[in-house]
Length: 345
Image (cartoon, rainbow, N blue to C red; front, side):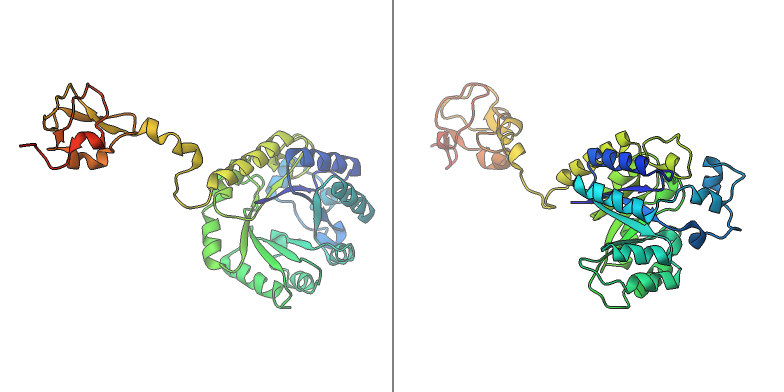
């Protein structure tokens, strides 16, 4: 089954209480896990860093990226409390670290799933630190937004250089919030499969709605991550590009439905359709009244439903043979009512 992650990220707007409501809502939607972001703003962003264009559109324009981000922090204690709550209601939970201190904290907490955000793909010290982590059932999720194939290949090499046993998942991603439909590029999943056959592939979706995630689900991926919000109109950089509870619920329901629809991959007659064979297929029947001794011809026989008699596949075997009895119009031509030697002399 596809592992579905609700990316709470920083959509809690720095409120532990809001974050807890989001965890509960995500559980109701049917996700497998919730994800947070753990960071110290000063260790992540310089005071000179500008905002992205999408951030300017959704936040106070006068404030800096650093000022904006400081409002979105959760304390380590908050994260521990939220993790415990999420686990208590049956959700897995992990967080993306954005600085070295946060990596240390999450490692101390026993985290086994490590998401590399698109912005850190070229951060060599960061990648090397993640690579050194030793934990049970270690998983690395490498987001590929803004990446060339060569950058992905280089990052993967660094993350694997410690030769630690770990599952490696590449997440196809576009780092625009929201991603325009023409840039979602689901076909890039096929390119990643071709270039990196040794890795599993997933999809981190920043597009509007849930259509892209459902489309990705048919491409034999293992994970879908979707940003989540309780209200798209809330202040903050990511709300407008996130799924509402209604959208996330539909995403989960439709992905589970798609998984059923994908089936075994082999063309077979299913149990549900087998019972319809007799109803939908045809048999050879009398096209008019036929007397015993008449020759079956294209004028006096035809093919009609139901399919419980001689199949039309045997049409030319029946033509030219002799009727052994009378047939009424539409009556099935039966095997034991045919002289298979041809016309009687």
